[in-house]
Image (cartoon, rainbow, N blue to C red; front, side, top):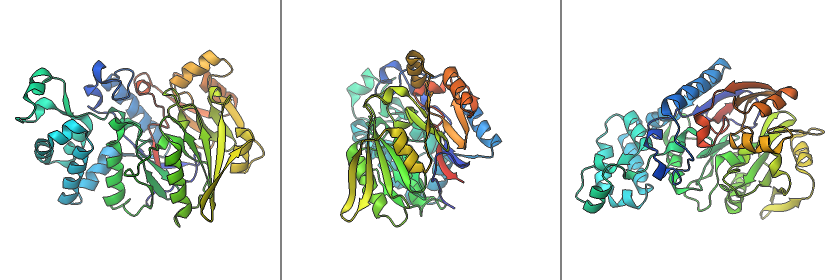
Amino acid sequence: MGVNVKSEITSLKKVLIHRPGNELEQLTPDYLERLLFDDIPFLKAAQKEHDNFARILKENNIEPIYLVDLVTQTLNQDSDIKKKFIEEFIDQGGNIAINNKDELREFLSSIKDNRNLVLKSMSGVKINEVSSSKNPLARLVKQNSRFLLDPIPNLYFTRDPFAIIGNGVSINRMYSETRCRETIYGKYIFKYHPEYKDTPHFYDNNLPFHIEGGDILNLNEHVLAIGLSQRTCPEGLELLASNIFKSESSEINKIIAINIPNLRTFMHLDTVFTQVDTDKFLIHPGILKNLTTFELTPSKNDFKVRLLEEPLATTLAKAIGVDKVTFIQCGGLDMVVSEREQWNDGSNSLCISPGRVIVYDRNTVTNESLTHFNIETIEIPSSELSRGRGGPRCMSMPLIRQ
């Protein structure tokens, strides 16, 4: 069947996830900022929390598909695919990786089991794991800490490297260099995996402008909402819009661009705004003061853009075909609580069917507000997972919704 996602709220059937692995064990204080972490999660506890997340999905008749399995199946198709994967992975690994390309290629090619190769590509390659006569001073000075290939600890946020739009996919160009290799996994899945290789592409990671999946929301089969954020730039959105409007595979005829503050706190649209029911949205009130929205629609010459003067609620109601929408505030009416719970992904809910959402248990005020508006909350523990600055929606990439 491939992929089919034309809503944020219809019944979720199949979803891509990644269980945190040894890549988190490679985090050190010196590497945190570069690898986009604020703290070091406890891996054993993070895995336990993630396993509980997967269990909740299964209990709700949702099939979790693991990223490691899909990439392994892809590489198992042909030895040439494996060779191309290794080459591209090194080429996007930065200057140090490229400077040690021959040694890295030999090391990675020596891993015969493709699953172990995929796991190693995720957890990184330390300088003392690879024999080389290059960089003798660097090897002596940083022999116990320096990486030839950095780990990829953000991988358990599968929402961002690519995004399913209708029956197609956007293979994204990531904002931060440290996350660029995440898209390679999606690129190979959607190029070579027998179940997904025929999926139409609306964006590719070789395009010059960054765009990430956390900013892309499927409101219905005809309308997308896309955030202009720290991680998605206007030029990237324009390229995506142009490709979508031109594609015979797409039913999208309107894109609502929502310009949110360019801050790490609000890194993606879905960190401040998610749909939880047919006419209800969970929103962080801090974005509403200076919010601007734009409408992109197809035109004879490509597409046209207009600034929307009406409130966001009015725009959304028109887009999804209801009389009005309700905004449920993250953290309730207390701005201190709202800011704290938004930081801990209180706004980042995963809707698995209309009016039923998976949320982090730590955001108690937000969850009470959802319940007050007749939204059923399924709470999952989040003491360690939340340290990566992402919630249940971030940790899930829907492949099929009803």
